[in-house]
Length: 632
Image (tube, rainbow, N blue to C red; front, side):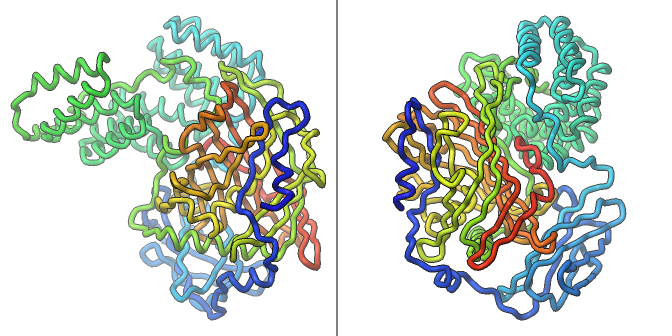
């Protein structure tokens, strides 16, 4: 490791615990930029057949005809084609950077960057189209606006009253809070849950609609609306609502649970069974309701022996619970019945209500995003994904952009908050730095980014003794060939993120790996952090869009039980918008260390690039990063 990296591992003054998050890689400084350039795969310069595959919101081929245009803002290129069976073929495209625009009646126009390379095959790019009736959700969500401590205390009081089933008083507290902050959708959602418990469903629906008018993708509100639709026998509408949740934010176990219920009410039993299985797998120790629903579905399908096996599993896995008692009774009652499906009519399966959304008060005080393995994301059907191919293209794309620069600078704005056990955040501590990232080659065809603040590594100006460095470069490290041998990667398919088609890849550090990309230090001891997570890579450019990580398991000897990190990457324009480079927009980190919770935010602006011979002032990102709590 370079000497400068060793200096990053020193303890700061009197700080009781310095936690320095470091990128690894042990770069070999001896390799030149020219040698690195020669190792990166160079695309052929022959023209390419570009096939643009147009998908609807659910990832299926778009039924509507669409017009596709590929053009350049720096060259006289303007190529158009119409789709045939959802595919537009454009011939004789020179490799390079373009814009791609797709339009179709009834859908919003899609426009994004396109990077074409010739790798010997047709170049396929996927574009998701979104209905004109679908609300825009690309900007920061109002759900993520910080709540002042006084207001949070009022919310906590309402949650405690709700937990004690004092619903009228809980409603009064939530109503007071929503009057104080009428543009916060979370408060309208809580008010609606209290109305529901008071059996005022019409009033609850109005509260939920108000929440959705402020944040059309508010997950908990959409789930509550879906439950109301199910209760009213509106299974088809409930399915549409739940599929919207799945597209916008992925699906946790509650979403799959409700989808299973709605599909069963519509007599779509194979799909219902699939969602019930997913709900049970994601719920883990909270999976009893999902397993009971799964058994109900299997029983009604005529899979009675399978249902009895599920009831036995519930009895064993959740002993002493009400679900276990019910499972035993159902097993006894149906013993000996043959596997035979009943004659079913729509809605014949009794509805199992979703456990109350605010049954546990502290569950409503969400202090961090969910673990990466507690959600699934909707992927396009019949779209093949080759893991190594996506990783290689993403790595080559990234390195081809960065290899021509010896460093880039930006203004880094750091916000630090401590979060108490009730989810109340402390007053933010903020600081701005001159942020510099140096680009070094190492390990053959890999790159290493080393950062410093205010021209050095003096942490005394950091707003807290909990110091982080290297967060923005995490996505770079995950893609480098020198690090990939330490991880297991799996491409999970094509999904939509920030309105773009993106390859979704899950990764996890091997148990016996000697390679790690994150290190923490406490005093003089360095700890390797075993990571798991996902990366999202644009299908149109193979640029990194986002990385999200969690601990593979807690680091007990360090006292680190949670470490959730999310970094957004996006286009940063320069030369008056005629060129752009893909750079980190910012990072968010949530950690639970020594029974204390912290939230870090890092935002970058005012970029400046320094090439080998030139330097160029770079503008801020074209758009702010979306809500950090969920993929859109």
